[in-house]
Length: 76
Image (cartoon, rainbow, N blue to C red; front, top):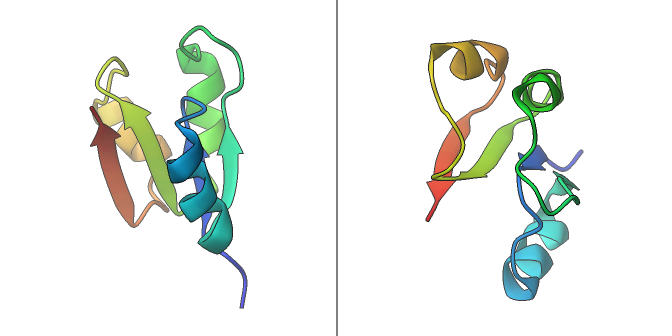
């Protein structure tokens, strides 16, 4: 069975990465700045989950792009 695909808008801390990487196929945004909107929208289209910080603008546009996401959670 394939692992769920996840997009994380930030690299997260090591413990979280370890847990996620064990059970998910995670794509992390590796640059220090926030990912631009034009990068986030296409990256979430085929993902099962999105992990983002409160600094990310979550609106109808993003939710429509992330239609395949079963789980949407902001990380404080």
